[in-house]
Image (cartoon, rainbow, N blue to C red; front, top):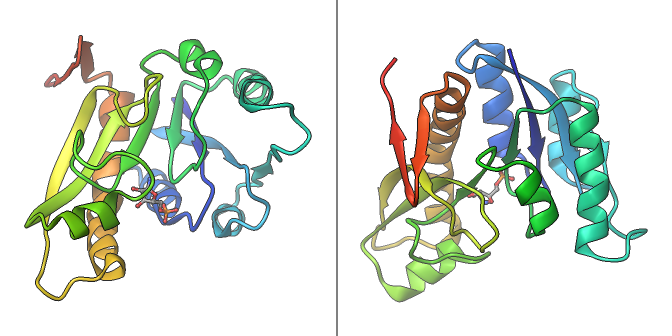
Amino acid sequence: MKKIAVLASGEGTNLEAILEAAERGRISAQVVLVISDRKKAPALERARRRGIEPLHLDPRPYRGREEYDQALLAVLRRAGIDLVVLAGFMRLLSPVLVQAFPGRIMNIHPALLPAFPGTSGVEEALNYGVKVTGCTVHFVDEGLDTGPIILQETVPVLQDDTVKTLHMRIQAVEHRLYPRAIELFCQDQLRVEGRRCFIESR
Ligand code: GRF
């Protein structure tokens, strides 16, 4: 069984969806680590409620991104992690970490990449006036939301949407899409060639 680490900085609703999917056997992997850079992240409490003692790895004692990522890497290696899942982790990973886990780090983004990358994807899509947005699960490379796309799904933008209502509907889709992408990885069904990620049938 593959071993997964989930990294989360915030609310943790995606973390919750992943933990639930694992509990129900919809993901054939074990979530062995939940790590947050923020002590007060509600994600930590969600992990505890599902029987996982999370790790708060505080960035403050480290002298920058790379040093912090070295510490993170040591924890991931010690636990024998196969897949790193970023679920609202608000830090850009340094090459040190990305290169240590090539094709083995995933992220979820609340827009249809390559449109609206970065931390305000929902707001920028809404302000731009798009009629359709959505979410993207992708592998992580050294850029900002630039890695090969694994799965995408659309969400229509409604006339009376606010950032909050739109984000909520996108997240409902995320909670379905992310466990599916993780399971494809666990079943060795993902093959990346250049920018393209192919899903192979079993
Ligand atoms: C999600 O909408 C995800 O797309 C983005 O950050 C948000 C995290 O939400 N990367 P949560 O912490 O999983 O509730």
